[in-house]
Length: 103
Image 1 (spheres, rainbow, N blue to C red):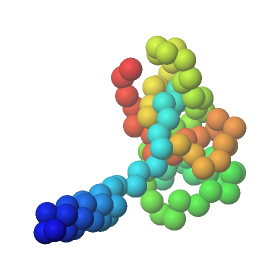
Image 2 (image 1 turned 60 degrees about the vertical axis):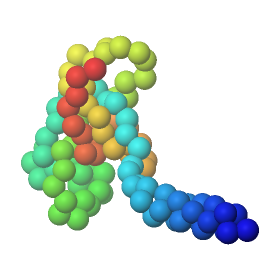
Image 3 (image 1 turned 30 degrees about the vertical axis):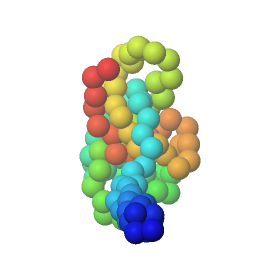
């Protein structure tokens, strides 16, 4: 009887630990961007204001003139980046939180 109880208690504790320690990270996507600039730069400020995007003072790298890399291999002639997947498409004008990578 006590062995069954210990199995149930252990299972509940493992489930609770797993549920509370899983980090939530936004999905990412590989992008080919013409440039990567700081969000406080003049270039980024112009695009962000044209799209009515307010980052609330957060300073992040912004990819400009980006397109997704959808096929295998690196077909990017500009800067290959890994960016947070946007909640909406901005027509390839920008991608948020872009880190240059090597594929």
